[in-house]
Length: 410
Image (cartoon, rainbow, N blue to C red):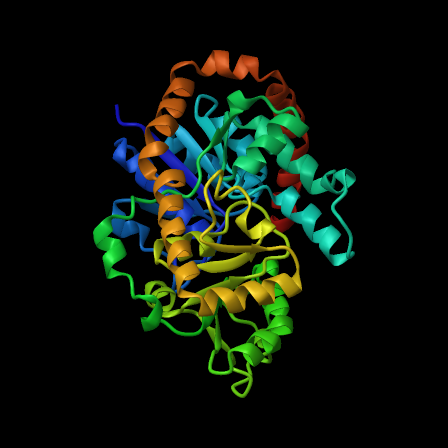
């Protein structure tokens, strides 16, 4: 009998808008390679930029929040596995799956640790260093409870894996590290990269609805005048989906600070620019824009948060800056120094091939899933905290959801 994977998405994947959308398609590809039937469910509305999952032999269905129609649907689908896209989806639907399909393996794709991003945002906006107590928010408690309730949680960052296992003592048996996945960059691809002299201008990119991306744009606006003064002919092109009115107001032709909105072709903007600027002030997980910069041979200047958990023991594909003055200095140097630029490009190739090569992770991931499928009872019995959280959540979330459903009907 063919295994059936049901994915419950917070949104329909938009790989050209968000790194999370690309990540979801990578996970789907792994399951399809292992011959899974896949159904994708979401309560959100599709946009013009949603990926055409139906064209990939994936069944798609719209579902309702706080509605018993989901119970009937999930019983009919009778999945082998359920994958939650972010912990909020597990909170909303996990208890229903436990009730209607108790044998289905439940997997949480964290995308990144939301409580970590929240803690860093709090410290950043209060202009201070991160404190251990910043972690212990309501979001932390919700996210950790979700991780414990699931049979397996996927972590995209080695830093976050270490944080959960070492600081918060989560058993590694219910966690699995699987980063962004890419095919190796070959010599042929490298030879096709536009050279240093064939590229011009700086660029930055990021979905404007994501708060860390907006803060990054504000930092770029602050630093740009100094960079422009040193390189008068240079421009900074800001790309990103869902550009806001406040972002458009930063556009200034005279200053060469150009807010361009959604990129029609990510490959084109990455292969024509000379340097990517990403002074990311806070966040979590891995940064898709920095991985793309490696893929397209575009060196970058970023921060320690931006580069977190990406390079391991290897050299960065550009510079990691420590403060605003250092960022400006590194941006100017990388733009003008062809020797450093070429070496940075080569570093990016090494990072992709040695840290994000799909062949390093695909078998281990499927083997882990199959191991849980074959030993579900023992796996769950060893995760006794998960059983406690399942019991408590089944009581509280279930009755809250039913109350909302009744209220909606009335």
